[in-house]
Amino acid sequence: MPARRAPDRSQGYVWPIYPAYEIFSANLDGSKLTPLTKNPGYDAEGTISPDGKKIVFTSMRSGDLDIYTMNADGSGTKRLTSEKGYDGGPFFSWDGKTIVYRAYHPKTKEELKEYESLLAQEPDQADESGDLHDVRRWVQQAASNP
Image 1: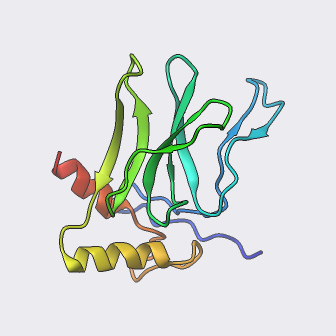
Image 2: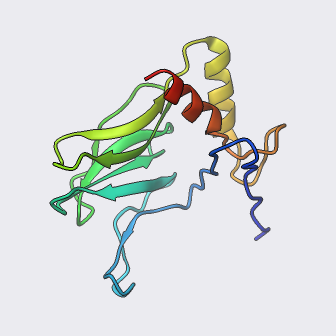
């Protein structure tokens, strides 16, 4: 397998979206590694609720970057977002009652075309700027439009 090309971080926060990413649980010492997801597409960016009962995460299992929850054992998966665009980086509030996440939803045909073009790239392909699945633009736009 060829070496993966690192994303160009010279202009900010970016990361590649590898379809092989899955979510696992493990003991604190790293033993008893247990897969919690096993789907085609990206399952990542997971955080556990303060009471330890739920996990919130980002997934591309539907073909778009959306937010899901599941029980801590991997059962009971539920999709929370469905609007076309980037929804990611979710985490629970301190009391576990609210989920906070980043979002960017394309508003124009041009923005939608760019978004879909980036998602269609193979993880080891780079766009003209050298970025892989460049979510930097989505995160910056989401931050500037709270």
